[in-house]
Every structure is written in structure tokens, then in C-alpha cells.
Length: 123
View (cartoon, rainbow, N blue to C red):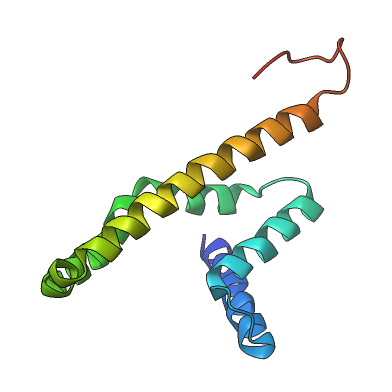
């Protein structure tokens, strides 16, 4: 399990180093996830220890929102002053996410169809 945690944190570190070296305006952990995804695709499967650590992290994902909630409570006066901008950003980003997710799903559904006799049917 220590090796799997080390792998996850190592990918995050590589992402942070890549961003620091290139100066790209992306979060380092996102680049680290791309590195991890690429490595898993090359490997062909998710190793059991990585799956176990990932499942544990996902089961406890709600705990990771506690610092964000504390931050909101600490800066509540700022949010009260800027509520229009915060509301517009939340609604706008949610709408963009829904539209892009729908477009991606349609594109992937078209891409996954090999022919009329393809196995699996509609998802």
C-alpha cells in the first residue's frame, strides 16, 4: 500500500515539477493525474494496490471538502460583498460543465460505434 501511495504522490510531484518547469497555467495535480492515467494506459490495467488506495481515498472523499468549507466560513464577509460574481461564476461554470460533458458524451458515443452489429448495444 505504501508503494501505491508513493506512486500517486510521485505522479503529483512530477506534475508540479512539470508545471514549475514550463510555466503552464494548469494545476500540477491535474498534470499528475494525466501522467498517472498515461502510465496506467501503457500498463494496461490498474494494479491491485493502486486500486485499493484509490478506493480508500474515494470512500473518504468527503473529508477532503472540510478545508474548503472552513475557508468559505473564514471568508464569508468577502463572499457577501462579492456574491454577484460568485453566483455568476458558479452558475456559469456549472452550465459550461453540463454542456461540455454532453458534447463529449455524444462524441464518444459516435466514436465507440463500430457498426450496426457492434456488441454491447447502447449505453
